[in-house]
Image (cartoon, rainbow, N blue to C red; front, side):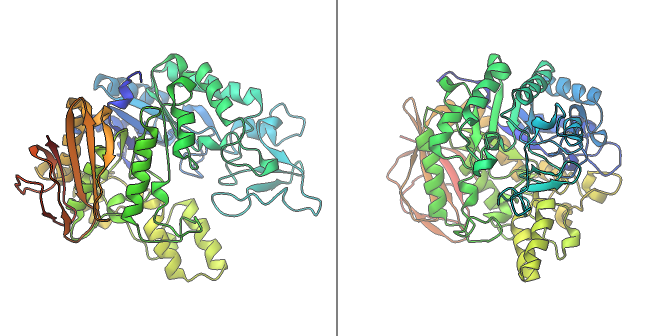
Length: 540
């Protein structure tokens, strides 16, 4: 496999609204990000995945784009964007743009023109259909944000498709002009010097709605190969596709270098392990650690050297991992460090979501009026109408709602956590006086320094990047594996629980690479792992 810079770095995701506000309007912005670049350099990351900063009416927090080549006023200007690119580059940090091309905003110029007239040259930029014979929706496709995926447009008497909000009409990728417009826009950003694209719900662009095919449509990979050829293929850029239905088998289709599609994909199999068998994210189930081991090991082994893994616990759509699968109370620091060590020692490109590196937690709400996320709000009202108990609905939102990740970053213990001098667009977690960057930087044993050390180890040890993976057979709650490379062997051992767990290995220790306790040990035989204990040792 040809080696690339994006296999060797760690990516940090910034959700701009919630990162740092430079002008006191309560909303994070581009200048706010620039102010914190030295902090990110100190952490050691090599790229920033920037959630959308394009012009948008903000129906879905920027994922509804009205102009791909302009910056949302709340975030700043194109001059600010160009300054961010230049300042980040000076620090050896690349900017990965969020590419949202499954849909646009209904306020995008293309859609405004498309809905005016069935004969508009822009009509076929989107997906329209006549009502069914009985006057209802064309078929029973549903939106990811609840309800039908079809919205009736009075002006022309047809329905348009929207797999997300009604204000996010889906683009028609079968139209060559749409693809050309998208590729031109991508080249606009490539010419500005970005480091790549994270591609929002990219496995939906091959949809065939007439046949009720939403993901992995028959032309999906044709489109991605064409995109590669027309845009980033000539450049060494990081491209990661958000692929909700990815398996190791089709992930190879996306990421095998010879296929000339993407660098890697975000897969969701591990993220779907704490839901019930119906596959509905709001119907909660406890995490089965044995199943988590099976899924992550499968991805490690089956992609092998044919594709490339992305490694993540959190993002703007997922709850905080230390609250979700760790222990955000008694063992918050210990479990956050364990989760970091477990993930970053695997083969693939690790992603850190803002605040993960200081162990930020979920933020429970007691009433739906405290929610901002459109997905959570829609689900709440839909389930309430079906007779669900309010407490149960709120419990689901508190566990899985997207606001958990989107609350402002905690920088210090001053008013509003140093995020803004104004009123934050979304309330902060009340625990910011105890969990913030300032305290993390002052504490030599903080979660931050575990992340920093993991990133530094990756820069210094090729085994972390290129080594093979082998799962170790243990009790269910212990997650252990080897990394092996050119005669070197590292053993990773983690206790994925709040209880003491047994572990034993006949391997002879050479040295400790990293651990989340201060325990000294010289043998791996018959160890009692303390709650959430994690260590990595080089072995003979």
